[in-house]
Image 1 (tube, rainbow, N blue to C red):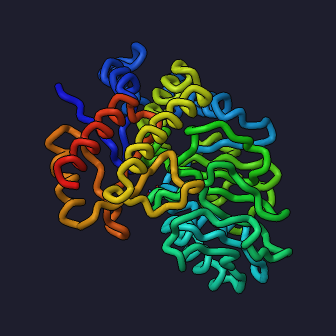
Image 2: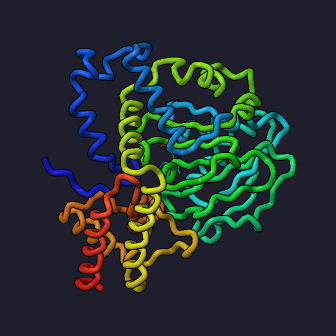
Length: 366
Ligand code: PMP
């Protein structure tokens, strides 16, 4: 067996310990004579896994008691639709902060709903003109006083732009897409009304979506939607309304157990900071060659993006890295260049190996 250095943007590298545990437990899960995915989602065996995953998440993120946590399906993209469906009423408005491909997508989905019900999905600020190379600063945001909520993304996975400190905008409810940096650092959940994230970067495999929301906010959600589209239904059913992605949730449990036993969010935050610092130092030491378009304070700790002097060199970089067992480095097709994803399970030694490769590459081709 040879595992390679995986810098994929998502689905992304998973901790090897979590995968080994899944391998060891695959055929006979806890003496049930079958794998966890062959057990009923109503069985005691599965329920323990499910509840453990939920409680680990609460513990690791210090989620306050008055918040609900649910596992849903449909990815973060489903949340782009469900949030306005629940919380953007006819005649109302929602404020969107647009600072990259994903927060734009969230806005355009909200606009579809707004259009259908006679509401408004506003762009309260955007960095589109500058090519999404920095975060939106709170002072440039033009909020609507009556907005039902403000939506933003904490980390733009494609553009490599991240809020190093999480802001709050005005007094409306704060809704945040944390798909690509949840669990990467400590932060206070309390200012947020609703947080969501697809699992496939820092939490587990794709197919599981995490929603963390204040209970009273969930209660405000629209009540005449089909039940399956209402958050409250999933809260009441403890995320077991219908058959959940049991194997995905099982893997989430394994990843969270790994995170807890490796020192929790504090420890991983330090490690993530060191990985990013090492990589950006190489980029900055060769700034004529590795060009990072993102402003210094907005650079993402999770997704570092840069370009080489030509597209041909970008391609050569990716090809040579692959020969050296490093994959997942090609930038998103929308912006090209190189993207290095540095999620929790990306090991510091991989980053060091990549940095050595980058220094050598610039010596040969710079
Ligand atoms: N938001 C962000 C910040 C993302 O990075 C992604 C996926 N890369 C999405 C939303 C969409 O997630 P999904 O594919 O789970 O719908």
